[in-house]
Image (cartoon, rainbow, N blue to C red; front, side):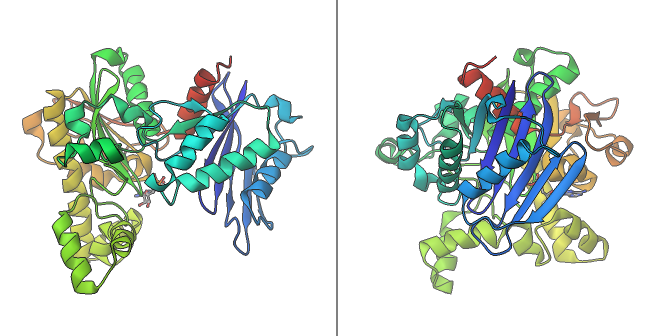
Length: 400
Ligand code: ADP
């Protein structure tokens, strides 16, 4: 059983072909700069990495290239398209239209069109990618897997905004969250690692990457998450402001003569640790700058870590205690300084880090980094969003 996972951006298409018997990646890669000059095609399989500048004017051509490479006599991993049993498509926003993974059908595609403007940068790109795959593989079952899916178990008092209830009903304005596949995966991995039934665990999962979100998971189900109506909310991120008083944004917009949409672009692209530091959105650059005495880089790191700590505190209350805190994604898996700062002075909550284990934490594998006297486990777990998408595709398409 082989599942192709597709993650389409407006000018990119990431893909992975996964063998579901072993849950191993047979081939993966990325089509970059689709529709832009000097498009780049990357294909990794059989221990080789092929990178080619190939003209990719649209997603259809990109999908054709991917399938061609997967079936290539020399570097391919399948002999015919029939070997691909299903395709899972990552979709960022679901609104309230989709509360679980859903088969691609004319009806579901119509609904996808209706909710396009919930994520104007992402959802239209996903639709283009799905259509491109349908054109090449019309008979292969395809499934929409939403970043928001895992969060639909939140109680109403956690997902509602305190706005006029009629507006919630009319426009479905509420907290949806993001990174659901990642939170779900690492929570399940944590339970497996701890040898416990996930139903008996209270876990806080910290997905810290370019975009960062924190989720409270009780008995395997999300009960609260830090991102909101869109992935702008929560902790400060690479370039996103995170939580901010709307009045401050409106005040700034007036002062700088920005329109609403310009203000949103500003909050999404020019703020976060990049805005604070003036150095970079990349945490490796920030650490280097802070180590060289750059005070604003240090401030950015401190704000990020403190934001994370506050959510950990809030979710410990929401869960009435916590058994394990999980760090994942680019920063969560790799940045020991951020992990240390985020968990500083939390012994009052039974959370104590072993600084040496944290600093020496191996990469690419599950590691346990709490001190012996810590009541709460602290785990670093590599995420695997594609595998969750592939698993959900198998279930929804009733494969295997
Ligand atoms: P996304 O999937 O949201 O684009 P990632 O999960 O790949 O993001 O995380 C990207 C971020 O991870 C980078 O911007 C960088 O700040 C951080 N990162 C990656 N490797 C390291 C590292 N070795 N040390 C510190 N930070 C790292």
